[in-house]
Image (cartoon, rainbow, N blue to C red; front, top):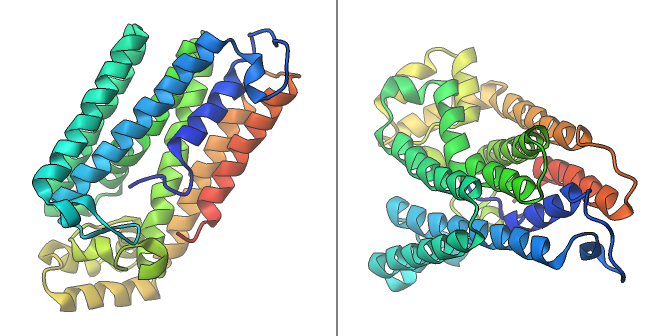
Length: 302
């Protein structure tokens, strides 16, 4: 669920530079010179808060999933135990709340509070899903937004609000983060079937072994309705996993998932292209980098 190859802090700092088009350029060089020190500091705080929430969610997820590795490294819960992992996540969330309160911006506080709510809602949806919901692409995409895309989308919007941007520009920032997050997760779903344990840092087929039905299987079910019966039965039986993989191999599930990821990546790039024009080279470079990131999401192999 995490944007690891593309650090959320990197995205948000690029977004800050890409949106701070009304701040006069100060004396000196460097990409940060187009913004005032105070604004840049507040926007960097959003990036730090986002990263703390992100890491806290990973620590809690590993406990819930009983994971023993995180990107090829022993997870904190496996090394130090569940109690310490939960407390570490709670500590990061508390520090994020303190930093958020210091910004004294009620709209930004509301956005980030919504993120935390969405993370819990997404995890709850995954844990309590019915057989019918597991077969629904709409349900899957909503869960994916809550678990993966809400954090980066609302944080991008917060960056825009702190810069004093219009509601329209703030929504474009939100759309960029939302579609970038969805594209990332869709490719992650593909890699769970096509990647190796070494590249992913987790066992291949991790999701389906946990009974989690993702986009490639959902698309395969559209081509082979008989796969519904297997999904309804669940994947506690290894034979059901083998049957599902056989159907997936005969389907266009992987290709269609990649196509859907590309669609969201293109929507993210379009959001950046729709921002008000600027002649500032730093703004232009940052926007170009944000567009480039949408392609990195699609072409990554880990």
